[in-house]
Amino acid sequence: MTDYGYGLWALVAIDSLIFIGFAASCFHPRSRRDWKAFGGFSAFVVALFTEMYGVPLTIFLLSGALGDKVGLSHNSGHLLNDLVGWRGNPHLSPFHLASYILIIGGLWLIESAWIRLHRSARADRLATDGPYGHIRHPQYTGFAVIMTGFLLQWPTLLTLAMLPVLLVVYHRLALAEEREVEAVFGRAWVAYALATPRFIPRPRRRPASIRQPEAGECTGTQHDAGQRQAGSGPSDEHASAAGRGIRLASGGHAAVTSVGRPWRR
Image 1 (tube, rainbow, N blue to C red):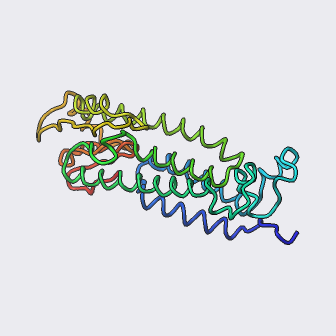
Image 2 (cartoon, helix red, strand yellow):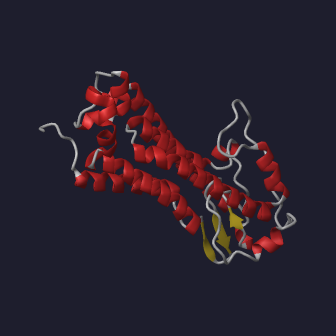
Image 3 (tube, rainbow, N blue to C red):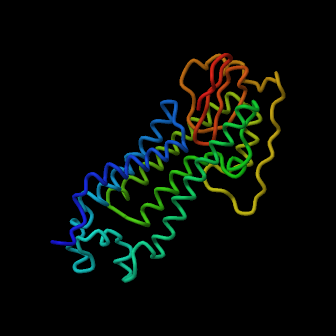
């Protein structure tokens, strides 16, 4: 078949490496929890490009049900276009254009959250501005937005099955991070969490304005938390107390700082 658009394994490898590398440059994974979150996203990307350029497993499995609506050309992999009868350039379809917006927006959200985390760490305070003024875990939300964008562009059975699993994993990671951050920031974190949704922003709400602890002020459990910093830090919760070696968290991605050592997320 002359228009067979698969078996391009070099493209699978190149596109996977490019996109995973670009996402890593925005997310900056450091701790074990960071790598667990980023590893799930990377597996999603590899599975996606494997079907996009390697083996069209979804088309094979659905060919009986879809009949002559799809073929084995590369353009046939844009299943949503085929199902609605889109006849124009598949890369200019409404689904594809929406996917561009979601993918770029998700990457922007991840990078913007990292910038706020970095600034908050240097200022020795909880990160509550920028994306953190609207949601507590902007980086996990960013990953979910990117994966949703890819599904609009190139849906596959495997990635459709992976997305809800990854969302559950990110939710559990977020809950674990929040427990650790609350142990560090005490009342400041509780006030922030009460005012700020976890993953989905509320419409037309002003960003949360949270009182930051003064230098040397104890938040109740802060002293004990500071003594446990030898362990691995959380992965995305909010910025904090560099001089005292207290965990920094970022809303899905956390950092640890210590005296005499460079801070890390």
